[in-house]
Length: 167
Image 1 (cartoon, rainbow, N blue to C red):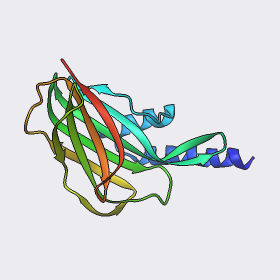
Image 2: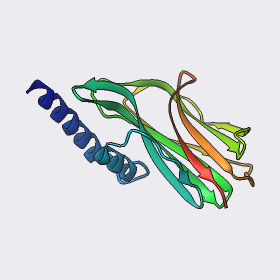
Image 3: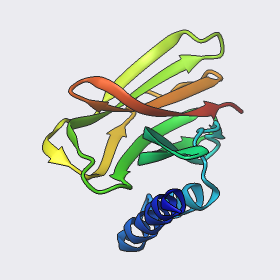
């Protein structure tokens, strides 16, 4: 019985967090990934826009595990040319905070070699939800490959999503 109550409280917390989010960048992706229980970020295609989310900070409940937080990344551009990368995070369970956060966007060619890395500024303090980080990509990448969008806390990676870049 206690197992069911814990799982129900976590589901209620997810619903509460999502209902408070605005209709901007993260609402649709977080809602979909929370409803579907997605825990793995599948690569999206950056033809003009790609968006994906992943969970992190896992806790165990009977017969499953649940992410305490969610990281979402967005890639904007056209074809193999990327103009902007964004990301945002939110805690799905009370009492979960991240401190000194930033975004890292690393581009790889189709052979897995790093061809460029961009960083956002770092937000000071500790937060349950991070505003949207945005990184303008001033050089275009005219090669097939992918971009890895990482959430950093104190410079260490906490979560990441990847988007494919191709014709």
